[in-house]
Length: 277
Image (cartoon, rainbow, N blue to C red; front, side):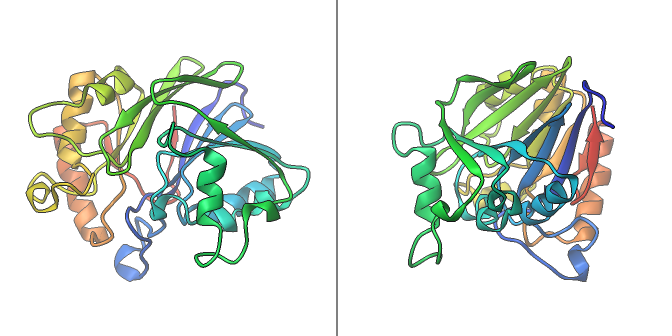
């Protein structure tokens, strides 16, 4: 039985842009963005990439009936697990879906309805039989989904907008900062505020510093910038996340070695990795 104050983070998908498969990516996994945070008895899911399918199967096996789902944004690699999330198809379940990146432009319900409709998908979210509540917020809002859990939010630098989160529970903090592009030599102050003295920072590292000039404008960052930010913010751990679909296991191994030399608290996020705070 889990402790009421236990705070764990599990990576169900750590790949970016598109899921990948094959022996060259078997160790770190190929599913796209999906991270689970357990704050005592409460389950928080961040993004709904292809990793959400396996997460849903496990939650069903556990009999979890209450959860909150938070979106960084709604590009395909972060949303296409939604129709295949088993907890949506159990009437006893209560699920809240939160988003803020489209504040003033589109509601969370409109966002979900927009991706589950013809000609892109054969069924609408009205097929869900769980009790689904759609929640809207604005970047910068402080969210309190349950007693003792605080989520701080901020805008990120990404095409079509994105939101970063800092989750605080039982004296610990974990930050979900993905799909953001840094400006060389200018630390993002929104990110710095979120990750200040954080216990864990999950950070977008689709590229390396060397690759960034080639992909300027794609809306992603580098593991080196993640290290620089964590050092400046005095964060304890860095989880390198949102791996390029072109990156194989051997390349991620090398990044892991270099990152740990630069910042001992660094780890390359792999599918199935669990971090206890």
